Length: 409
Image 1 (cartoon, rainbow, N blue to C red):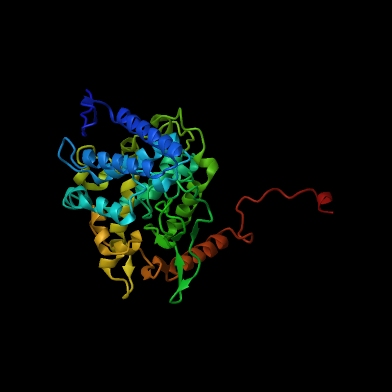
Image 2 (image 1 turned 120 degrees about the horizontal axis):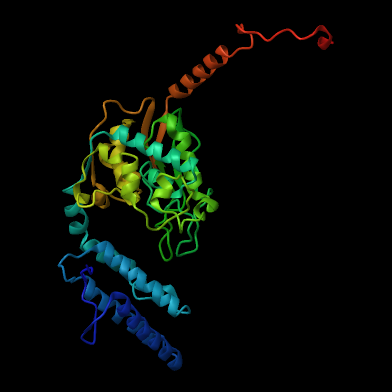
């Protein structure tokens, strides 16, 4: 069955596909650019660029189905800019139809449909997680398998649900400004806060939102939502994702059955059946209500950022300076709580017990988790106990026969 055309892509009264429409508009901009060069007047191209942007505005703001989708609007605008730049590479990005809009205008456009697209659709119908700790245990198992069998999609899914980064923050793929995430742009926080050691906290020095023609985004800190015993494997997962070799592994011929049953290594994949991964690791068993995704009941890595932000206050004890209503703002590195509305998409039932020995604390640069040292002390005590039970002085009930006397010289 053909997919319904959501927008009215027509040219000279004829219905066309969006790609055909894009091509026609790019061609007109190319002609305007050539005319600008011939006449030595850049305003010819710039005026045409604004006209084309207005055409897309009229189409995208009045879709056939009557539902203004902000994310789709922004994606189509950015995609069209990319096509123009590929066809006319000598045109600076700042002169392209979408990029040429002043930032305040772009923000206003994005916010215009924000309430319907996010708050009404998602906040009023959230995904409900009743058993958050078993849910996280499933993610840890997924992460362990992904690392063991070198499977990028599994590691990516798990990590996206264990700390609140954007879905591609840790993917070493060149961004529009040429930046590539690596082990220097995402590092573990080392230090102490109020005499407590900081653990399980990542410093994000290069947000994926840091792209061309945008102001510098200051580095900020994000903690993992796992227990202290799982911090090392989450750190390993982060390093795995940032590794170019892991990212570039062959993925073209790797099917979902190859990942889950045959344990075949796999690099980054744009498209994959996330539902089969979700079901294989039994995540749905801990979801009481799929809320706004009830039609396909599929969790995707992009939902992880909101999930983690909603989890913090339920999984950690907070110090007196960390206010519950500020936690999501800090976790997402937002400037104000108004921006958080789009992320109230999960309802988390509080577990019977918070993570033992860990404290969530707010700082100027974000959130950190600190430890009281009890877990390290337990580990040291267990190691000492294990060493004592394997001591060389322990009597062997079945000693080997004594060697011949001559061999003792």
